[in-house]
Amino acid sequence: MTGAPGQQGGPGPGSPGGPHEGPDDGSVTDGFQLAGTPDGFGRLWNPHRMAYVSKGQEQVTDESTCPFCAAPARSDEESLIVARGTTAYVLCNLYPYNAGHLLVCPYRHVPDYTDLTVEETAELARLAQVAMTALRRTSSATGFNLGMNQGMTGGAGIAAHLHQHIVPRWGGDGNFLPIIAQTKNITVTLDTVRSAVAGAWADAEAEFAAHQSRQPAAAPDGPGPGTRE
Image (cartoon, rainbow, N blue to C red; front, top):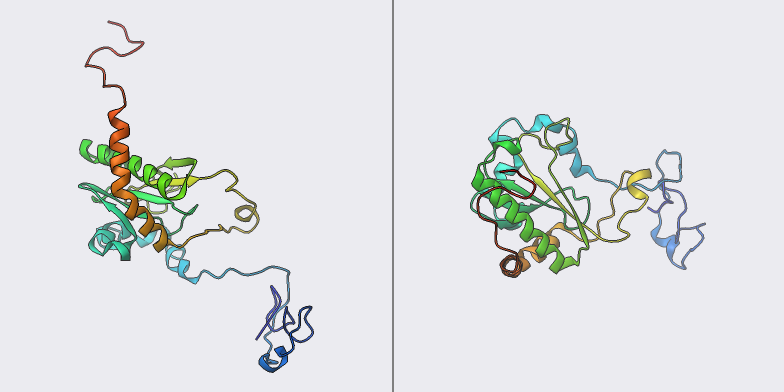
C-alpha cells in the first residue's frame, strides 16, 4: 500500500494517479485504504521510546531497576559500552543529542556529584578527557558540550544514578528539526559509534597521556595566584 506523507492509502509517488507513476505500479498497488485526514506532516515512529517516557523517573527505584547499574553486567556490545575503568565506565547514550553522544557513569549507584569519592571524581574526569580525544579521532569533532544534570528539577533523565554527558559538536550541526518537530537527525547507528570509539580508545589514551606529559608541572603546595600570605 502506498500513501502520500501524512495520508494512508492516498496516491503518492509511483502509485496510480501519483505524479511519478511507473509502468507496473498498478499491479503491485492495492486499493486498501484506512480512515485518516491528511495534514501535510510525515511521521517518524519511535515506539521503543515508550518504555522510557511512559514511566519517567519512576522506572528507577533502586540498583535492581537502574539501567546504569545493569549495563556493566552485560557485554560491551549489548550495553553499548565504550570503555571500562576501575570506578567508572563510558557508554553511548541511547537517546543521543548528536551522533557520538557519550555518558560517563560511576559503577556505584549514587545520585549526586558530591557523593563521589576522590578516586571516582578523578577517574570520571580522566575518562571524559579520553572520550573527547577519541571522538576527535573518530569523528573530527570541533567542539563539545559537557555537563551533568543533577536531580529531577535539574533535568536529569535518570536522577538516581549520576552520569556526565559528552556531546560532540560540529559547525552547522544545529537545524530547525528539534524546534518545529521535536526530532533529532542522527547520521550513524549506535553500534557503529560504539565500535568506532571503542576501537580508537587505546590510541586516544596514549594520545591523551602524551598531551598531559607536555603540560606544565603542578605548582607545589602553597598560596596560589591572588592569595595572601
